[in-house]
Structures are given as structure tokens and as C-alpha cells.
Image 1 (cartoon, rainbow, N blue to C red):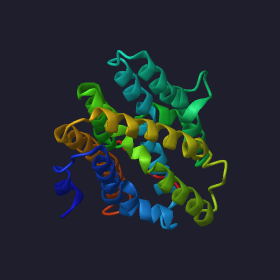
Image 2 (cartoon, rainbow, N blue to C red):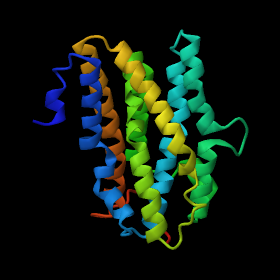
Image 3 (cartoon, helix red, strand yellow):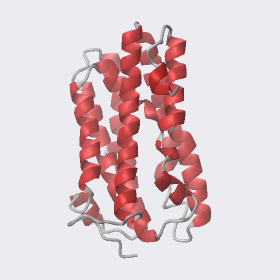
Length: 249
């Protein structure tokens, strides 16, 4: 029986946490073939450029979804806690924050900043998946919106694996290239522990706990779908849609 079939028997906060961790183990995108290829040094520079370019769309929407979440929060303490996520990505002035560091990584990989920021050559499937996430956070319950962020529980493991293996496998990647991920190793655990405590405290019935699990499953599906799109366009069968980024390296 897989984790999806087990989440209807969530009688305690501890059972909820166990189910969330099981969802991550089964469905997080560190299990995706595209990630395995990237980790194992089997992608070309152009394919890694395509990943960085498309992932920018996701990075750029994170503060938008967090701002949408905060706009619905009446508790100022919760707003102050959640506001740090926006600052982490946007910084307090131009050139700071996670998005700026992601753009630096794209430039270090040989991508044109204007092309990345314009979003013109990002896969339509990437946009559809990410926009679905923003819409879910905007329109679902506050409990579900916060629960959808819990993929950050699993981020440190994929970051550690990705950074060390890519530094070892690709001569065109340096520690500077991967510097975006340095801050995430402390930010993601901080944010995920707050969100986990929140859902354990506020999901007080088996039905509410099931909805928390469903929200995390949706988020893992969204992350997985982004790698599906990259794999289809740039690995196998390699059908790059009209207007999408064409690797030049």
C-alpha cells in the first residue's frame, strides 16, 4: 500500500508528520530521472542551462505565492514570520536575495540575463505547473497553502547531493556557480520546521490532516512535472517546443 492510500487514517499530529515524511520519500523530485542524470554528470551544459532557465520561473514566483498567502493572514505574528521568505528571495534591495543569486548562476552558466528575465523561452509546461502552484496557494485554505510549502522538509538532502555531485562532475561549474544553494541549507530547515509545527497544531481532525497531505502531494507533483517537461524537451525524445530555449552549448 503506497502513502496515498495510507493518509486516510491520520488520528494524531505524529501520524500526520510520519505521513508527510513518507510522501517526501516516495514522491519528492530527487527520485526523478532528470535529477539522476544531472547528479551523475550525464547532462550537457546546454541541458543544465535549460534546467537553470526554467527553474528561474519557479524561483521568481516563490515571493509572489508567499505574498498571496500573507494577504490572507490576519495574525500579524504569522505575517512577520512568513515575510522573511519574501525577503530571502527578493532581498532588501536590488542585487540581493535568492532570485538575484539564481540569475548570477544563470549568467555563470553562459545564459543571457535578459533572455532569462524575459521568460520568453521558458517551457509552457513549466509555466503551467508553477502558475498552478501560485493559484493553489492563493485560492486554497490557509492550512493547505502552508502545507504546500513542506517540500522544504526534503530540500537540504537534494541540495547537498546536487551541489557536491555537480561540482565533481561538471568542469564548467564552480562553487560560485552553486552559491545560491548556500543560504538555502539554513533557510529551508527553518521554514519547513515552522510550517510543520503549524500544520500539526492546526490540522486538528483526520480530514484536515488528509488535506494537508493532499496539499503536499500536489506540490510534489508540481515539482515532478517541471522535470518531466525538461526531460521530454531536452533529453528524451528531445522535442523542444516552438519558441522554447534551444541549447547553444
